[in-house]
Image 1 (spheres, rainbow, N blue to C red):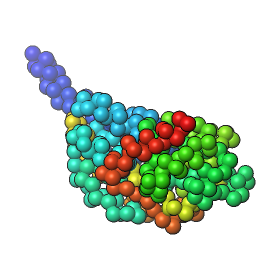
Image 2 (tube, helix red, strand yellow):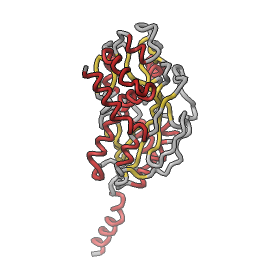
Image 3 (cartoon, rainbow, N blue to C red):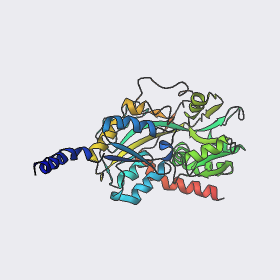
Image 4 (cartoon, one colour):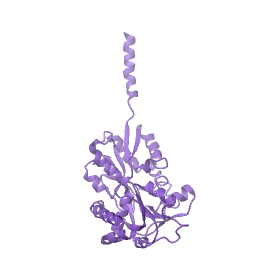
Length: 327
């Protein structure tokens, strides 16, 4: 009997060691979790501090994240959503599915930012990227682009945050003339892709002269490939700013872990990964600073609608875009 009791006691003592490792599920866009994106390095860095299993789930491009959250509601398996931007945060907040993040926020943004639900992790300016050898004199504004015979690839604003950012860029720059600008651009558009990766791939394959991307995209080619031949066209109207954010879902069953991850977003361990994997500006400048080439195409003027203004403008801007492409 003593032997039996001893075995039972040892089993009781050993049981806690057999407890399952807690899992934190982060819903994000596909390029974030690709082998060349930030995901793998972020996962390793966070798991070194959390005694947990961090699992990223890709869900298309940025705008598709909100659609999935709205569809799944409080029953979502995700704990954190990473990859919305300020064109979507008002609509995301209106779902009531997000909880306050409780963090101090970013320090390196070019605009003031204070949102209790959504925490910035990186930012950048949208721009049309081109090959300098093939296009020595790029257009200097949307009107010149529309008047040219250049072929461009853009992303769908219904599924992609760059695509939606382009609509808001045109709207912010031209206001009531936005429909006229889109009418001029319609013939230049080779195709509209669901997300950024597909569009950029078509550009690299020579299917278009220019692609909607970011002012920092040429830095990737310079640093990762030793190719100084790509550039971002700087437009007179200014460039629309994208601020990417993360939010904690209120229904998470891993509240403490989600809070720990939100705090990790602005730490050196996360922010130092961003420049040379996501090829965006970090929300907090890393100790090593920014890589060479990041400021090679810095716009003179930034354009950005408030989240509420962006949500209010979205439907009309989308209708103008659809009408122009349907002609």
